[in-house]
Amino acid sequence: MQVEILGTAAGGGFPQWNCACRNCGRVREGTFPGKARTQLQIAVSSDGHSWLLLNASPDLSRQIEGSHFLHPKTGIRNSPIFGILLTSGELDQSLGLLLLRELEPLGIFATASVRRILRENNSMFSMLDRVSDQARWFDIAPGAEFEILSRVGERRGISCLPLSLGNCFPAYVTARRAAELEASEAVLGLILRSTSGKRLGYFPAVSRIDQPLLQLLDSLDVLLFDGTFWSDDELNKVGGGAQTARKMGHIPVSSPEGSLELLSEVRCPRKMFVHVNNTNPMLDVSGREYHHVYERGWEIAEDGWHLEL
Image (cartoon, rainbow, N blue to C red):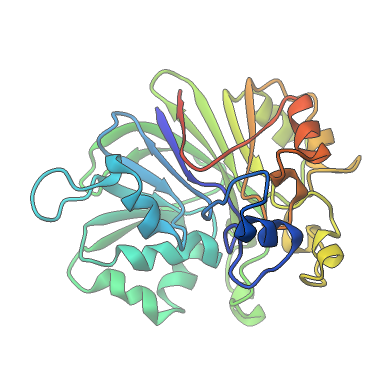
């Protein structure tokens, strides 16, 4: 299984368009010891020709143009992207679907609840249904492993086990609407398995870590994990908002109750943080937070990284 990390930032990217925090300001000045990043986007393939997107970021158009393997190779319009697998209905994970509205046949894998809030409650997503069978939706369920298939049933050499990681739907979903949906389908983590048996864990939004989850992470070959915030009160410190990391559905990296400590015994060979917010101090490669992460056996993924499983 080939894994291409097209983007690694949290919603808004880095720098974020409306932010003048210390990180963003120095990136614009050209003095930041680190790299700019696009919003989180992963592409996976079993053969290097047909590609499945994990979510669809708002930066997807520029990410596709910057990735030659995602360019059309035959015919006038014939994308190698055959499907999209959604972990939630959050805007920074689903808005990119609207950028794929040019009548290309696509398969979209999502829970029934996420499908309903995108298709039944948002008229913009009807742009994916302008012609018959333009987008074919496949319902998936937490705990039920399935094989990734093309829209016409062709095997793609990858299986997926979705896991429920949270019960909060996006803020644009009203409380009345959320009560009609299945809470366990709101936020997913994914374990993708290749034909070789190697396993990739993709967990961009994690609000809690329990023993069953630890056991699953321990069995992985590569882990891409929620690195949104360094501390729970990070946004308060930079004046970027009153919500804490945990209230936003993200366990912070630092502190005794943070992911770096709670996952310290996970034996997965490669562990990487993704979905890193623009305010996170571990983006600074000269800083103590960055070095602390690497000393603990973790990496901070960067746009353009390639992995083979």
